Length: 246
Image (cartoon, rainbow, N blue to C red; front, side):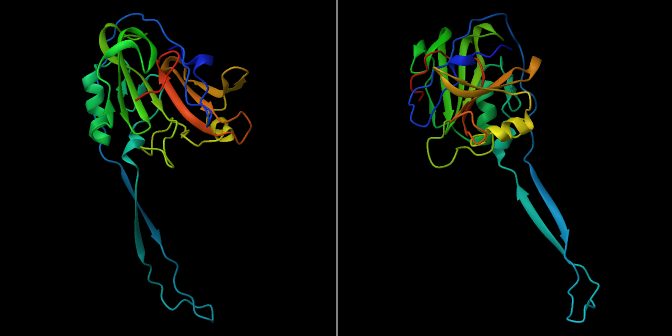
């Protein structure tokens, strides 16, 4: 899938209040369905404590004690950031199904614009209608035109970030390589060595990770130096001349 963010969507600097993202045309239809919802994820690790050692160096006991340590993975980690989907929900599925999927993980959204004119607070979007549904710093976009479907309302894009507070909300969404908000350029390249990192004279620093037939994930950076920080991530279709979101 061709990135609709391109060089136009790659700027979100800490002091920039607007996000400019390139618009996309529509092509073809789609009838993808939601994959089964994943189960809750948690892992339990058992570690063996070493025998107690006396001052003579001889163990007082050969009995080992098992300590159970349970680490719960954030539920939002199931929302893997992909170029053709968000977690188990693919671009092209109907809006209500996509929203229900995310609600099953994160609860009710913080805001929902409902369907509005395609030129709105989200910018200039393809088609005649657009809808933005937000959970904290995670925004899902829906409309009636995109590369994956035409003439029906469907899920076509996501945005994660920029962070509106001290910590991302929700915590957990990341690419399959683990890139998320706050990842440095070095970390992006370590897990996605083919990523295109750039610094555009007009739109600032960013990167693209091309997953081939699985689409493109784009990010905006504080700068393109090795310690430059990821400020936002994008996938799928989005809108040009982003204004403020909701």
